[in-house]
Length: 517
Image 1 (tube, rainbow, N blue to C red):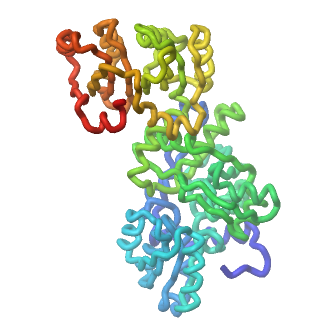
Image 2: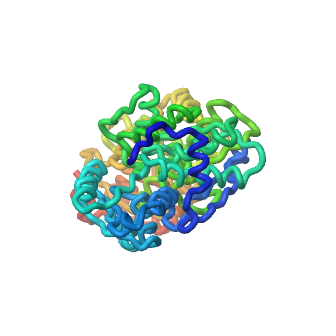
């Protein structure tokens, strides 16, 4: 980056933004109202759809604006950048448009999906190091060795100006009142461009920066009044996982950003779901940061009738991450609560507990998860998930369990429980004699489980139960039942009367290896 002799003012950046060359590769993305989310929050939420650019992110704006202003001599030699994602695609596409060579240095840990996307745009991918920092250092070495021009992902006035065209479009597209614009922050290029334009044209509009709570380098730097290097960053929102923000972006953010908010992983997963509900599009975690922050801001300040814009800055989502997002979205929205409940290890206690769940105060709720393995002759420890309607319901439900004599712990915000324990309930048990193991397909409707329990003989004990709602119209349930040999005929009749599809797994070697004592 070539540092100017005097810091650029918002007026200087305004000129650069108004003359930025971005529309050879970028489109003026839509500014759409999020109807469902707005109705829920009691405020108007506008979504700036940068996820709809050709590279599925805003990054091509800044990359192209920088590269379009290079001299013919610089373009003849080519450009280089270090990136594990969206910036790499922006540079590769811009290079193809300008007819120049683009060398993209990416960490060896980069998903193949992103490597293939860069190559599809004509970029020459070089894999080096385990992290962005390793790739960045190597890219600077290659720049000097081959005379290439380095295109910084965020800390360059021309890159910043290119990103600032997003704010120019927002204010042109929305003529009415606008109270705040929420912007995700990684290295700070996007918020620097947005803040400069808004504060030069409409200074009354708040610019609010959003970071992950495990990647908040800008927020910490502004608080410390100097750039702070994080020892490590979370990788869920890989598009904003930056350990050290830029010099210029730090200066601008410190001077022009009105407020900073951090959000956690569950809130971002819920934000991804909110965007999907309103748009039927799936954004990447970084793309949902602004939406998650708006929800948090409204709850903290109790605002009504205001108008907020959220920049959906990217949609380069790894497909294999969707399962995790779906799993955590309900907890992030507090539409699901998790509990550890202790009930007596005696006949009928499982059914009595299920009946209590059906009678819990509040709106009708469903069981989302139920995991149990017999492990003690006197007590049964059950992992339970329940649907909820409002924040804070888990505390009320816990109190109800306790009032009915059950031991109960609220696990809704317990990371160990959400990440691991729910998958580990099981194991061998010396108490599970005469056990038969069956996989059932239950219809996802009220009463399906109680029908199962009511048809069972009271002398058959449930020794294992595993269920997780997967969003289908049927549920897959694994059940261990202690059935004496003398009752096998009656058990077969029970299965015929129940009329639920099933597969017996008692002879399965997996059962014998991991569950059977």
